[in-house]
Length: 350
Image 1 (tube, rainbow, N blue to C red):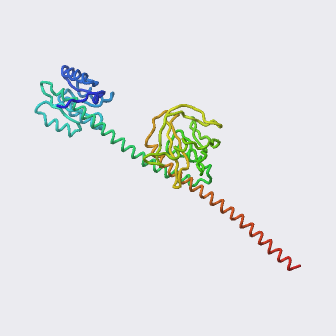
Image 2 (image 1 turned 30 degrees about the vertical axis):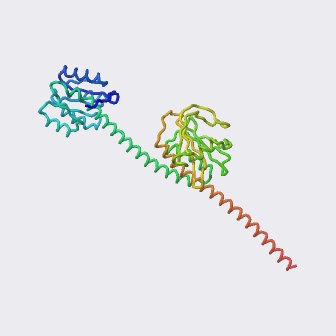
Image 3 (image 1 turned 45 degrees about the vertical axis):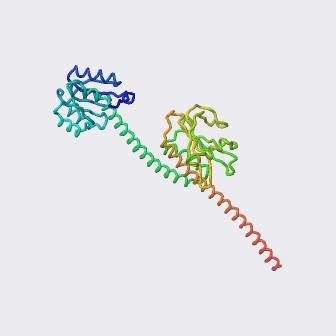
């Protein structure tokens, strides 16, 4: 028989419902040796009361117990959901009860023999139930993350619609920080932009330790190789790759960035179709929470959208400037033509 790795099944908390004290003590002793925490209930009513007070991973119930029998205990526990798992203990000849227990929601069953050999089988049963629970939790986590991504993508689209409507670049940058704080739940961040020649990096807006938006536009510095590696990261996703480092958390004080703590810092490049535009930094210096991978992946999508919005706004601004210059030049030419025609008319009159 394959040996069970007890380090994998330890830390489980069990409730054993058994009316015979000697059998209850034997079970508790055996399971304590295997590394489990065990509580004992002498009947079904006490067992259900303990389940309402404490949190158990697995409940083991003898079928023939005083008051509420083991089958009814299984039925009531199944109404609460898959946790705790339940195991029905039956005697030889009670296979019908075992089948009924499984139909009622029991996770498994064991036949209780007189020699107590069933106790040797419990570690393997608990291991199997633990794996089932972990699989269930992983599936639930996956479903929750999928829902979070779907909602997050809807928020990104909503944010993009509002950013496109911003009349100028300054309002666009301010609104960007405001919306990702409110809609995406980003705690602390800063947005930096590179000039078209990629020689200078410029600050825009960020969020301080109090959750307030700060003007960081007075920050400007030459693009060093370190900045360039953030603008043009190398990796499996190239321009969409976000990275995480551990270091000093910094905050703009009006003239420079000063250290206010330390921990993880995520950086996400902002790219458009034409190339790199800037870098977005975020951390959780306020709450000290762990990094949320779902939020970071949503920021990758958002920064891609933001990069194209910024490029479009810049192109619109450049086109508007050209139109204004053409209009001014056209007006000057019209003025000169009008002046020339007027002089010709005056000379003929004279």
